[in-house]
Length: 611
Image 1 (cartoon, one colour):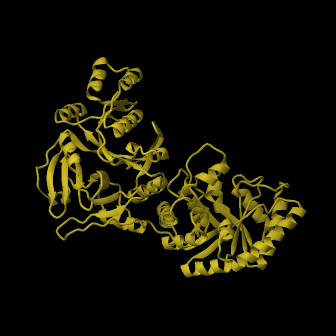
Image 2 (cartoon, one colour):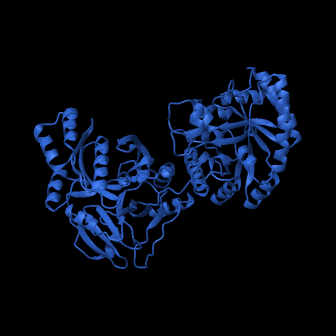
Image 3 (cartoon, helix red, strand yellow):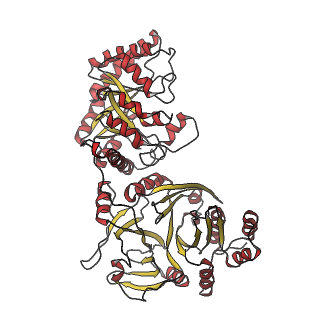
């Protein structure tokens, strides 16, 4: 599979973009005309640079408003085309993107448009250029790829073909099946973008909210199956207009983009099965994660977290035989406390471990996806764990799933034997991410671990809305809510909303709350108004409501079951939640989140919460 990317996807100068694309492993690029116009390098210098970097210039774009016009306007089109095609010859680009007319079209007639594309093709052929005609979703007359193909077919010129763009096809809800009726040699180019489901005008949706494959809601796999069956073997090129990506580091975004194409290639190869061409390859199949193996809290001094875990009933399993690292467990919930290379660091969630049936396959999969590895010194007598670094810097580790305790637990010595406790496992891990990495993180966890987005919500807090997306494994053995705090949270120094948290599953959260309080645990207080609201929403018995008030427990209920939970106060940059799910409840108590955020904000500012 040949890969390509439009320079419009990335931030920086044209030279910086080209270096980033080459370093990420792309085969070619689309040169976006405004990038070239603003560049200090001449077209010939850009051509030489791409050659040195090992990149092909697959497309030059865009050339707008070329068809459906009167003869006077078309003479101006031909004048522009001569200049454009001469530039392309100097640049070394052989294909130009011509968008369906938006601004100047006055003639809604396929024969007229075809005739003008044919005449334009005659000019292009003299310069060794091909015209890839694309139906824009907001084209004045032509907004459907099937009509664009009819016009190209009528033009009947060897230098005129179609460009298929997933956004323009899928945003309009057009059926991609007709792609298979277009001869492969007339599909001159393919552009790919994903996008979220939004209710807005299609132009704004396109210009600001496109995503890389695997991050949105478009069925790109289905579309690509039709493209492959049509016989197209040209580049799979990304054209993603997105405000975030055009503000972030181009090298990082390019790697992210390349990963999205490899993920899509894998999905298409698997869908096609034995009929997939040799140019497509599937990734190693690692299967679904079996569950969370451990979480790691890192700090210069982890004693406050040790105290909190002890109050919650965890037992110390000992110190690692070669590192300043300790292990605390309760049931299948394992918390690693790491003080290695942590000078000046407050307690924070630094790593997540997952159990895999095929850890070696996951290592190979992660490598093929270009994920950066996390490196830690491991001696010959110690368990070697697969490792990668997530986009927000959290380290991800994996080891073989075990029926009992994993082998690496035996590396911790001189501790208390593990015993069953009220805390039985890790229920979910909630990660708060910088705004610029949320899409990258979604793709990372989807492509590496096979998680899917199973829910999304906006949580109102005192500093604004916090967007949340939940990623889960098929059996919900792993749940990762990914949150994006509003920028004002950082700008005003309110970091409580940025804390990560680990939620532990409990067999009896009421008993745990009582026992933990007796051992000195400070539960995050909940206001009286919250319990008045619970009484109104759920009509709880007075005795149960009184119990919730007494223990500062939160509550939620839906058609499938109930959820009781409580929070600890924040220590450094992390806090814990203890939850009890009853029946089939799958949520996270979203109604409590605004109250929790307010309480944490007050605690961060004053060191206490007073309601």
